[in-house]
Image (cartoon, rainbow, N blue to C red; front, side, top):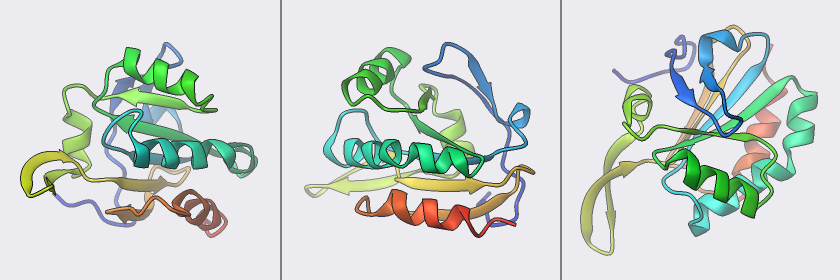
Length: 155
């Protein structure tokens, strides 16, 4: 099933770098930026994460939480978060259940080889749990800024 704008965002539970189990349905009242990225500490993912981190205080002022998801382990996430002093939590989906539920697991190619992996995608979910906007096949440059600007359009 392909998720679309105005769909209810599928609920999920995943371990977070804050030591808790994050459950989407228990986090109403705030908008959520859910960005799926391929791998901790790789150039594009690092840039994207650092950009969201730089804007985090402005994003928070707009009653919004940033969460990054990849299939890396919590240990890997904790190292990544610490190395770049990321100001938000990362969720670990080692079984790729949520990644598949959100339709971001797909065929990718790199240097002529095809493989399955995470297609860099960001979901902006409003405080009622509905998908406000989806960015797929994200180009990292200025992406965080674009998502931040879009928060202001949530009614």
